Image (cartoon, rainbow, N blue to C red):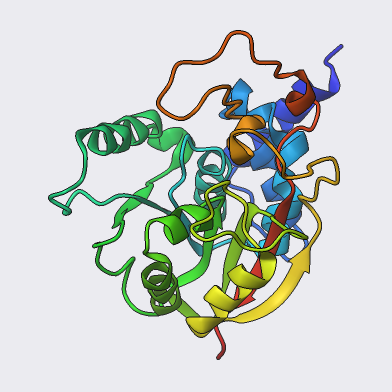
Length: 281
């Protein structure tokens, strides 16, 4: 007899390959199929209890046939869900990745983009993923008003530290359709204040909301989907002390084998804000 996980995988594979028409009320089933599909890696599946993929994506407003842009997808946690979902529902998935037109782009970043594209090159599984350069000097993310949803997870602190926060928010606003949604997730500093440059990786919710609204967006909703009350935000190496990074020494130094990870592993992943913004019509 198949266990529940195996059953979900088989159901997901069937739904993603069947060409089912997505009538009203079937959207959730398509997303569940993508989340349960066999294309997802074990390391990403292990993070589901912390990242709440179904709840987060539905909160951000994901629907069939949308053009969805994900910014800085990392290892592809969301890619493994969003790309097959777009393929199955007649949508378009666009990954905002390292900007190859930037002459200052490091070789490591160029190699990282090449490896990412190779990892998700199977069109039978992931469909026709589109790519657009993203960075401090990148051009538009697409034609004005062409996207339904932009998603960014755990990136705002990097843009603040890199001095590009206003630029990227303006890019998001420009590419979204009137009424389009911006989904934001980041490590939450609250009740601590915003530290200059976000050196610990944690962001004040009020600061993030103000930065996004400055670009013209309106806050539509907040969610506690990714809250973690066990996270006191007081870690020796910032948020990176926690899973999944589990840093044990100052950045640039080798791991410390004597570092006691147990109390930080017991916290799990960080306490995070989950926000939905809308571009006014």
